[in-house]
Image 1 (cartoon, rainbow, N blue to C red):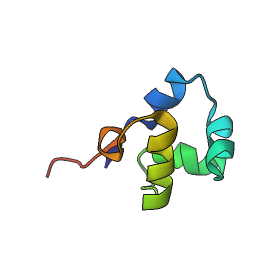
Image 2: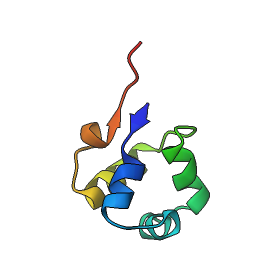
Image 3: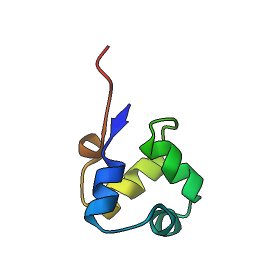
Image 4: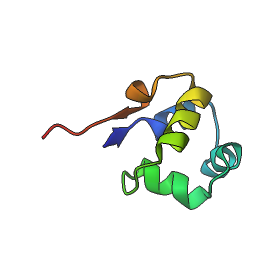
Length: 65
C-alpha cells in the first residue's frame, strides 16, 4: 500500500514526532508508515485522513497487482 503521509506531514510542517503525538502513536510508527513497512489500523488511517483533511482513499492507495 502506498501513501502520502510524508508529503502531507511536510505540507503541515510537522515532524514525525509532532504528528505521532497528535495521533497518539510513537514516532517509530509514523516512520514505518512513511517507509511503507507498516500499514496503519483502520482507526489510525481515519485519524490521519481527518488531520490532513483528505479521504482515506486520497491518503492511502493499494499497489497495482
